[in-house]
Image (cartoon, rainbow, N blue to C red; front, side, top):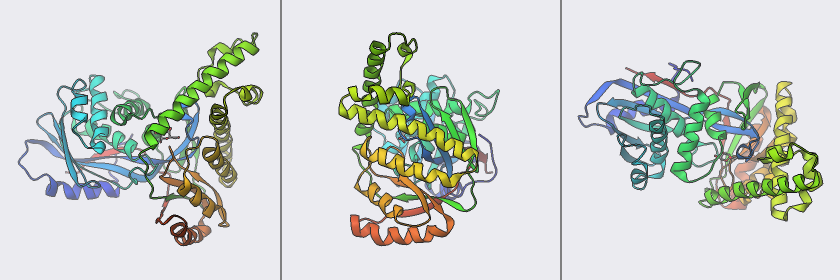
Length: 425
Ligand code: GLA
């Protein structure tokens, strides 16, 4: 997490808006500052994070940014340009007064409140501040706009607390993955979704031109090259958002836990000599061979859920090996396979996502595509030869509205750096 003078565009906009949106004579301390954090595109490894498995995301050149000033008191006031509304809350009294503040705040502000609550739980002293929140991560679109807000909140707190704590390399108060973990907890308390660590880790670890292979159990990670000059990372937004996503997400997680419990019992019973069976605690621990042997003993729905996760973990490892060799092209077929699994076995896709993937499949030069993130709406991720991006755009613009009655938004992203902050005078 580097301080950087290269401010992303949304930070510049937020800086410009601040004086117009916070005009009163607040007792400010110090000059203006900006803090930001990126959204992410997960190349592969969907729903594997909370199964202790592997993920392979890239942070993208889309950020959530805060621009504002530290206050002399312990109040945080925010203005969201996306929702055109203010929100304010007290820092003093956190974490105890979290719930009473959460219930009266708009959803977007709860992510910031959650992060400051988790910082308070770690006894990290935070200053109050006023800030404009502006970003270009599509909100609710599967590119982790909420994680970007959370990680940017942590950055803003560090900046405005003026040396009260630091985030960064060795010797800092918090390491990047500690920030990711506290932001993940913030997501849980703010939204009630028992999400894994993928989004927050991807945002915290972003590096230009790189994907990150993260082991969600050990939290070890490795950067892999992701910068093929003739291949584009295209994100297409269905423009569908579904409320149902949160409860369906928690349901999938519970089903995975149930599948592990059952498989563990079956393996302990059938392989009394297998001494590692007792240590099985997540789908990560079930090998493909074991699943082939015992999977059929699970109820159908659990068999399909577990089958998808076990196959997806293997696809992540395969993709990582391909990236290591610079063979980005060969990742394509794995994306098609992942989509089929998410659609048919894990059942987190939807008609609009499937439609975008089908349209992409018929465009020569699209190497692979699949739904992105938690599912039930949001975006697809597509690996596309540069010279096919325009054809894909045309195909989507022609066919998607006809089939769905909706417009889709197409965006080309790049693997970009992680969070940052800067004083701006
Ligand atoms: C959401 C969650 C992540 C992850 C993905 C699916 O984005 O926040 O933790 O589980 O869904 O891969």
